[in-house]
Amino acid sequence: MQPRMDMAAMRERLEQMVRPWHEGLARPAAMQEDVLKRLLAGFARTAYGREHGAESVGSVAEYRRLFPVMTYESYEPLIRRVMGGETELLLYEEPVGWAITRGSTKGSSKFIPMTPTDLKVRVSAGRAVVNYVLRTGHVDVFQGVNLNLNFPSVVGTVRVGDRDVEYGYSSGIYVKHVSAQTPVRSLPTQEAIDALGGGKTIEDWHRRFELAYETCKGENVKLVGGVAPTAVEFGRYLHRAHGVYPKDLWQTRVMTLGSVPGINTRYSSVLQALYGPVDVYEIYGATEGMFGQQMDAKRAWAPNYDLFFLEVETRHGVKMLHEMRPGERGSLIVSTPILARYKIGDLIQAYESPYFRCIGRDRPGTVLRYWWDGITTWDFNRL
Image (cartoon, rainbow, N blue to C red; front, side):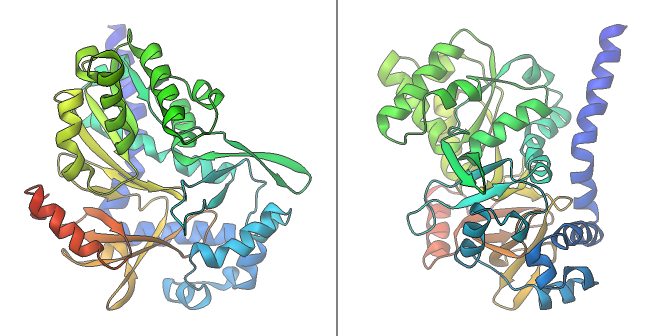
């Protein structure tokens, strides 16, 4: 009888992890109001928040009136001052680390500070696999390991005031903290990946791929998490370097991947060719946070309404993300524990509630490319 009790306890723990997400999807308007109140309480403890009247905000309309929409370029001078030691300007806790991008903003990396509160929010990346196990009953995912193909979580240090704080790539940071919060064991460990350094050359990635192969070739890999193009390149590397594909080594159950649009349309076929008949689940996130994850077999993600305040700039003005109609598109604006009304630069398309896709960066030509991809992949905008 003991195994059954253990299984029941595990299921209850997993359900607790996804319950707030599901509650937010069931009542998004009320949940978003609660999130805004929580975020404003934090903003009121910062100089930026006080300057914009965070304590006096009593409605979404007031929040929009008092807090401007900001891009990274708008925030960058403030972030540089935080790096210089003025932490209270944007933060009400000392930074415990910095997440960097791979160079999406004018070819240079963005630096986003992380705090203890922010890190607690970021572990939501684990919801995708937890929800998958609850929905399918494939508990064997937790009996295997997660093949960790992520970027280094530590690349270097940045001076903040009178101390050095580590910075690294968000994908590596996520796996380090998600592994500590879920039953999933990740190999190679993030510490082993970090030890290889933060280089971005082909040779650097071959060293990481070889580490992953040597560490995991005898393991029971049930899950692959990380960046979709990296997972594809790893599969091809194995064939070139060792004459095998991932499907020859492991019986992988599910892949939870992010970083690029079109994971369920442009990437799923090649991933299944390399890894076998895996379920491919999409995570939607960025350096600034994890904003949604795939909930079921429908090829789109569902937002984390319980963690972030999510707006969208449409041709008809700014509205809440949950107010978008099927087929409507707009540029996402996120409010996180660090950043108020941050225009992240992603173009979002709404489907039937509560499903969305990120179709690319908010640039001319993105919609045309999305439709062309739909034609070439026989997607035709289907869920």
